[in-house]
Image (cartoon, rainbow, N blue to C red; front, side):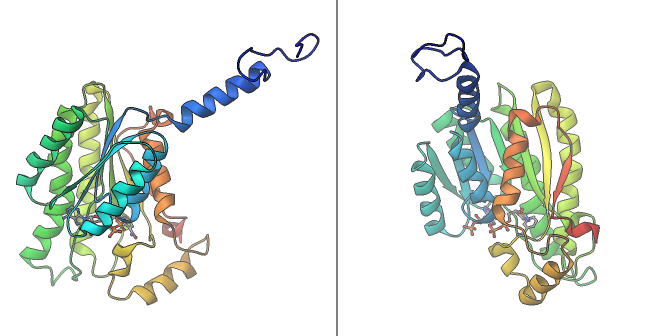
Length: 279
Ligand SMILES: NC(=O)c1ccc[n+]([C@@H]2O[C@H](COP(=O)([O-])OP(=O)(O)OC[C@H]3O[C@@H](n4cnc5c(N)ncnc54)[C@H](OP(=O)(O)O)[C@@H]3O)[C@@H](O)[C@H]2O)c1
């Protein structure tokens, strides 16, 4: 096919116009943007964590998922990750237990040598009004959500020699009063404050640190709310977009923060709630 008098072509690339080939190459780069990279996602076997794991794997990232209780969900997740042509490893352990962090990061070092992305996603907490919070309820939320984020981030940064990304999950309870959510809400506020401290300190190592604050998202965690049906109705009624969010919609923002497109974003908390908090 001659290119005379028409758009020039590149031979060997199906003789598509040069611009088309450039677009195709760019699309391919974006598609496999995380090829060869390694991500750790705590709580990566269900809900938002799993959606994030699969989206990163779709773009070529090798993924380590941590979980605590459900071996079946972990096995299903690693199968789905491997089907995407990447390496996948599930490590069982309570992220709220500091002794477990050594084991987790030891496995990552042994299997992958380094880390590029750390998503602090696993969370636990019990429901109680602020005057009913006892020490056990307070410690559970702070230990599993905020403390684990800090100490895992410290370990993660040690094995990010090429720079990297850290993203933590928070929720609207960090800055709004959600009935029964006090201890968890405060632990999420701590995560947002930690994000700023970590971002400032990690910048010299080219590690960007951000948080994603989700609105109400239909996952197992939300179903554990004592008044789930009532809550669902109220959320849908109040949401400008007239529905509840999905795990994938939050995961899209987490993945964006891990991408090159977010190079200039650090220390921020991005609210992903379909406008719920505006009303
Ligand atoms: N759903 C929402 O409405 C919503 C809104 C805003 C923010 N978020 C935040 O998004 C994150 C994920 O929530 P989700 O709704 O996707 O939760 P989810 O569907 O309940 O999944 C939680 C994941 O965390 C794991 N996990 C729980 N406790 C753990 C522990 N101590 N150690 C290790 N892994 C643990 C679970 O594994 P096992 O079951 O095997 O233990 C599971 O893989 C949380 O930080 C949550 O606060 C959620």
